[in-house]
Image (cartoon, rainbow, N blue to C red; front, side, top):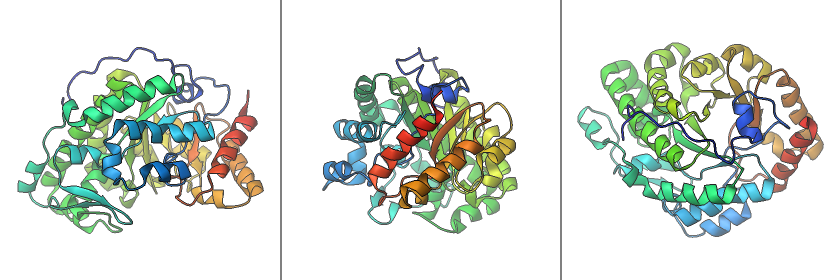
Length: 355
């Protein structure tokens, strides 16, 4: 499967008329839909129990475990969408990249990509490489019924950053050195990653995902001119590759206030906003024709309930004139977050926005 294969439009699913998908399509909703990035994970005691002794990458490759973990926050919090439990490096592992997710560190790549010869590590991804994804999504959609399932992948820039740096980085000096110093190699690297990412998203959509989100977690490290020239074309290729399926496409990055317009240009239907930019200002930067997602600061959830509710009202007031708004945090749920705070937040948003 390549990014250039023509996708088949999906038939409407049981989740088609859900509040989440309506908001993504900028249609009237019964209430503002809510879901949280990293809603399935370390903040939940039931997650820690079921993952005990199982390495992260192994847990992403066991359909029964993926199904249980993905469903946990839907049961507990009553969120309006589930997000498929996985990790952005799963497709890289699936094509044979020697990497592991080390506790307390993150993804670590044994042989970083620094030369043109290193590109040979990046072969095409096939559905057979990730058959466990197809199986897990089949199990999930049967359990979820009318609740949408969001598929996801890491964007080419963020994947490239891990591959070139060899692991997490605060400065991205090796990735940026390649981007500035060998732009032809950089372009070829991102183009290959765009094909792999598009293939991974296609597998998820064809298995039954109702929407997809592209995480460009580290794009905020870039100046707008560099994003437009060196990153946007690869992200646009991913979005174009899955456009024919007709499912909403969400684009999110951290620290991307200066890039919001460009991220919208890349082709998403919904642009995710972190907590640094108010929703009304984000709408001005993105421009018309896009729904927005966000954007409560995740650390607010450590404050007393009254403070959480006050900050939530600020977000909702800032978003009140948007055509489509999906309530979310401005980044992922932090591991030490009280799960009950999330449950209360979902109920609060639903109550305040009931129409």
